[in-house]
Image (cartoon, rainbow, N blue to C red; front, side):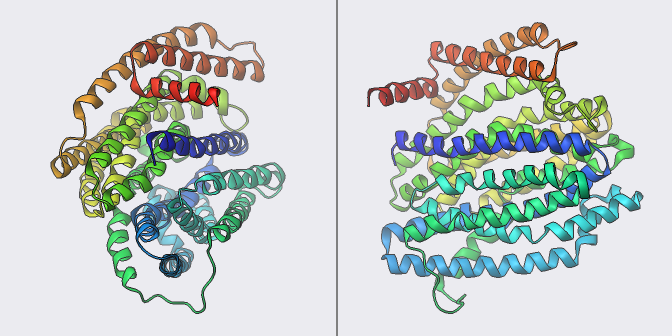
Amino acid sequence: MTHRRLIRSSGIIGSATIVSRVLGFVRDILFARLFGTNIFAQAFVVAFRIPNVLRDMVGEGATDAAIVPILTEYRHARTPEEYWEVARIILNLMLTVLVVLSVAGVVFAPLLVKVIAPGFIRTPEKFAMTVFLTRMIFPYILFLGMVAYSKGVLNSFHYFTTPAFAPVVLNITMILTLVVLCPVIGVKGLVIGVMAGGIFEMLIQVPPLRAKGFRFGRGFHLVHPIAKRIGKLLLPRALGTAVYQLSVLIDTVLASLAWIVGAGGVAALYYSNRLVQLPLAVFGISIATAALPKMSKEAASNDMARFKDTVSFSLRTVFTVMIPAAVGLMILAKPIVRILFQRGEFAAYSTAITSSALFFYTFGLFAYAGIKILVNTYYSMGDTRTPVKTAAVSLVSNLVLNLILMWPLKIGGLALATSIAAMTNFTILYVILMKRIGDIGTARILSSLARICAAAGVMGLFTFVTARIFLQTSGLSSLAVFGRLVVTVFASGIVYLVSAFLARVEGVRRMWALVLAHRRI
């Protein structure tokens, strides 16, 4: 896979993610209008977060740490029969683990809620609702795991389209239930939408899997030499790359302590995290996902020159997008939250606490994306232990900083602690990688970073001035206000691209060259 193909693969994933995130914003706007930051919103956020954290550890985590590297190796070095035998063994292992987790989650839901949202215990109605929703939603991880498995198999063939569009299906079903069911039966209707969406997400993976050659084998076999290797790779990953989700989980625990950080903190973190996830998912995770099979192949063939070039290129590319995105979100945090969410049950207080969390989350945006690239780099080399060690340092620093910053900055302090912990994790991962494989082009990365920051600074000044003049929204309709926000964001993006092109930012010039090449075809 060349750099051009890597960008195109990232583009497929990114395009699907944009569609999903747009629908996700529609979903969140409807959710905010119906529930705001009240107890039902907080109960659903906690109930939905638990299986999503487990998904990141044993679903998406298994895909990145074990499935893609192992299947990529088997596809290039073994026969198709051996490849599909291993693929079926992996499926059986994942099914076994996910079924056990689903049952355990339903049984131990009260204990989980006590651990994750201890502040809810003071409000019996909120606690009971959270336990009920957790039990309803927990089997969703079974469907998430199967989607992650399908993604791993298809990505090993460098096929990204259907797995990338799976979240679109989930968002559509949740939107439908918010419109049709939730006004009638409340937040329980949204859980029905989640479960239905999970089933449909899983079903759309079947046709491309069969087209690639997947068939169910006879019997249910778990014994294979590869099983031990998968466990060796996966178990450390379960504690490793989930550092971001685990950091958010720690934030949730502390955000439930309303007498310290204020009421509505859990929901505020959810909304702000959803916003900061947009650029991260569209660009950061898309590039990391597309790069993983390439890095795995280069590591397996011991082509270290190309391997290091791929890592460096991936980091420079994500920084090209993440840094201006962070600057834009910092400046526009309050207008974005107000325009998108402030209606119905989502009042001015909800806007204030959500925009505060969003502002501080953006400080770590480049680090969140960089961690995804670097962790996948270690996975492609068969090393899942190093990310665990750096994750442990990051989690401890996040907890300590949370306990310090939550008092003066309230909900914003929790978000800032997560950002600082992410930057710490990224720095440690980068330094260890340099010691392991040698320099990956640090001078080139720093040069690119300086140019990106200069261009982002120009954009930030433009955005600040434009927002002060153009986003004074009194007396305007909601549609007009939203239109002004879109124009501001679009114009800021143009200013950044022009500034980056003039500053000779490599990623922007390369993308422009690809556009010109495509127009000639």
